[in-house]
Length: 410
Image 1 (tube, rainbow, N blue to C red):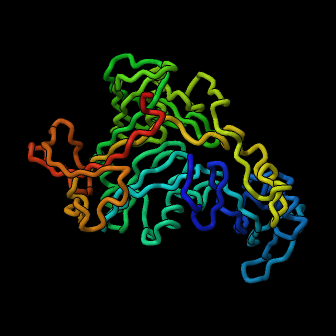
Image 2 (image 1 turned 90 degrees about the vertical axis):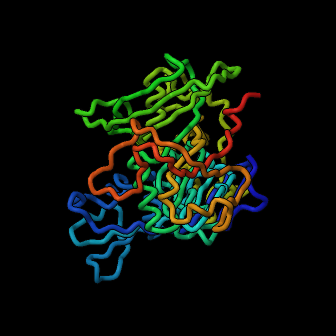
Image 3 (image 1 turned 120 degrees about the vertical axis):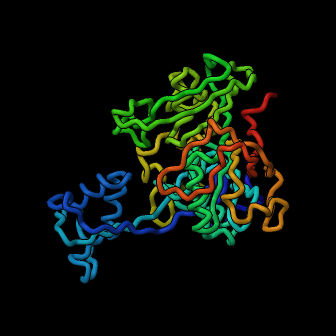
């Protein structure tokens, strides 16, 4: 997928992939009680997703230092130093982020309250794990300085694409986040799955919880509420589209917002997302994945010219080949509908306060009657504007984004 004519500042691109240029960072921690009596090497290996060779390389170059107390200067220490309370550990490292597709998030609409974005698959919403600059928030701040203070109001998994809503003020962030929490926001996704739904219209009511405490990132599944599962409801509809490989398109309407909810619920009815390696029993064909991206560090040597390490040495077995190559799963957030009363500038639907910023998506305002049987009662203390259960027409705002190529018939 082609990127912009020029990559954002601080990024480099090659063969459809984007990297943040590596930079020096410092991991600084007060010695915790559980670390006391252990060596520095053992603690760094247990706390950081790096290889032993990388840590030893840092020791040799004096990048691991320690303050005996907070008021004393840092000194270089050997790998065998035994940690004590009140010490402060510093590990200076050259941060190499994983690659992301060379397509930036597209701003569909913005006003005084919100910024609505079409998120490409492959980008985390905010800094997490190894991703810091190549995130949706990071790219938006690079490309649109006016959006420096945007706040996420909900999440999409890194491998999921589609509509994403950010708030521009603390007040609007609270209102929109509360609307998601109280199920005032109506959501529609599409997924390309294997198998066939047991019925054209299925309502899945199955609690979801973490099923493995050892995997990272974690895996989730249907877990009884008495065992820690959280209630989750998703309505699934067969879209009537069958592709040449036998996969089908399914519309998904999640009422709750649990982690991996749609992925888990689809798998629970025998229709996992076709290229979702975490929740499908069918082996994903890795030959269909893009070539393993290589950071353009040096033409002659893949080692970084500043820290003298390659990505393979930095990450080792902590990042698999599939994780580096997989850029998306076939799940896309198509549409969100939100009560207009939640937004102060909801009247600005014609561009008076920003308006559409990109023609790749759409926004519309409409009035509709609320079905009293579907209204969730307010939680105690909730002050969110709620749809009246008396059938009064309610003005809503709807944001939608186009379908990705994998969801279109040839």
